[in-house]
Image 1: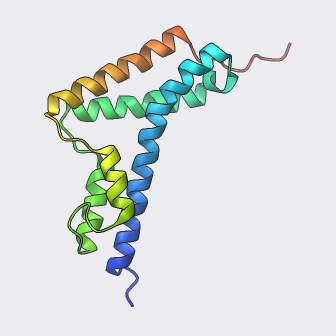
Image 2: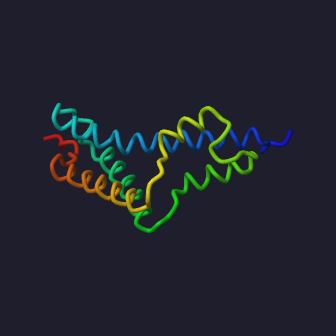
Image 3: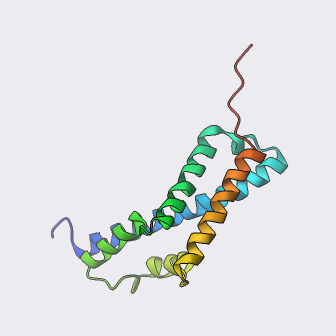
Length: 138
C-alpha cells in the first residue's frame, strides 16, 4: 500500500480541519478569555506571548479577508480531500460537523466586516487590558 493512499489523504485533511477549528476557537476564545481575565484578574491572560499570538492570529485573518485571499488551511484541506477522492466536505463525520460549525454562506463583505470588527475589539482589548511582562526582581 502506498504511503499516500486515499485514506491517508483523508486523515491528513481531517487533521488540517481540526487544526483550523482549533485556531478559530483560539481566536474567538482568546478574546473572551482576555476580557474575562481582566475582570477576574487572571494573570495568564495578560502574558505577552499569549496576547501577541492572539493578536497575530486575528491580524492574519483580517488581512487575508481584506486582500481576498482564501485561508491557506482551507486550500490545503481541499487539496488533500481531492487527493483522497472525496467531494469537499462530504462523507466523513469529523469533516461534516466541523465544517458545519465553521463555514457559513454569506456575501464576502459580511465576513470582511465581521473579521475587521473582531480585530478592532482585539486591539481595544490591548489598550484596555494591556499585556504585562513579568516584573524584574529587585
